[in-house]
Image (cartoon, rainbow, N blue to C red):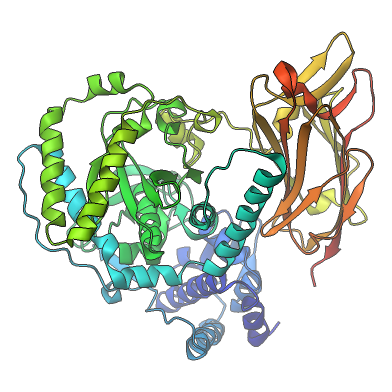
Length: 637
């Protein structure tokens, strides 16, 4: 394959994936040309997350490496020392031409993306643009009105919140959001809610398009835009690293005052990971932990014209609150968890012993601890950094100082909104089911060490090439046997016992066995208004196929006015399944690589309403499978 053909293949990816792959490939070529005798930089480990996710998973990425002269081994790609660098230069020129042609065609220009910040004999790469060329927001001087360290931190954080109001930064952030796609999804979801309200007479949650768009923004931000970093991959060998120390080298601390240094478990090399606060820089790096995530997500919300706050838990977590115009209240949004309006999740699901939670925006600062606790008295007993009167007076002082230049109309609006919020904060409420789960962001080991682990199922049925025979796979479940069967291409059968261990997510659901009637089925928990369960299926990244046709048998039984809604979902596609018996086929998902089946159970009458909507009801001695999914595939064109 020629260089031109490889470049054409790269251009078939999304603009963001193409740009990132080109940036990395150019950098690989430049590093080798600069230091051709360095064998370490001529070897790329397949298990390196950057190589795997940003080059090998991108169309044309593998071909480009081979075109450069890299040879594939079992665990790596290696450029032999005998390979001429002229080929690298040629491929690099084609990639740079692709970059430049995009700019000429009206793409948003990007500044140089090959920064290496040097520290003595070692380097750390900033995964973003040349930071010297990134416009940075300069804050006005800080007044420093308090001597108490806690109040000083509040004053500093409130001062930093001015950056969210920077119009140039907001404009730059908004350009990165796929707003048309998110708005289309939000409109679809709002119509679905409105239809349910009308047809099923459910309670109107008073959602607006803004509320739905926040949900879509959370999902996109977590799944596509930002990357989580527990510890960076080793720069030398791509291996796993562990935290060693914080850098005190002044040459490292140019763009941030915090640079973490990690030691490789394999080769003992050191890799540096800077913790940036500057929003303009974070729009380039797009990686980090909760601090970086919440900073950028709050900026995105502000860029869309919403009032948003950066919320700091003194026990080491941060998130965002967005003011819902329709609901007339601040709504909790945690982009690390893709969580919307579940404020009690930290206390209930993460087992946090909360003390102080402060919310910061360009306009105001507020103690919002009480929104995140169902036991105000216990929290109050743990607060000892200053008296409550001193804290309240400090917040009032900071708020009045910030708002003194505001118009009378704006100050009156903010005051009325604050009064309504204070009344709301006085009310204790009990956690719902969505607030009883532990943390999902970060590695399992990292979460476990913090005591924030979640009892996870989240099973995904991954379909690899060896599973597919004659372009077809079948996955089925028996309630009587309480097991799944997945027949693989090598004639082996993958068996998953117990219904909950094969589902991606569920809420208020259990398997009911009626001894007297000798029947068994899935139903929602007794005393709940609604239960849901979903299954997720996706093709392995190495499979060069996509879905052609879906055939689904999904039996359910209704009594009285029980309701079961079954949906097949993939990205912006959603198909309702209406049959309680028989098989339904659809080609609506032709061309996709993943989809989810979701069932929602509701309705019913009286004290046994939960029994009036049942999934997969069958006799206890049945050998049938009331849930059978058949997927046929076609080759990717």
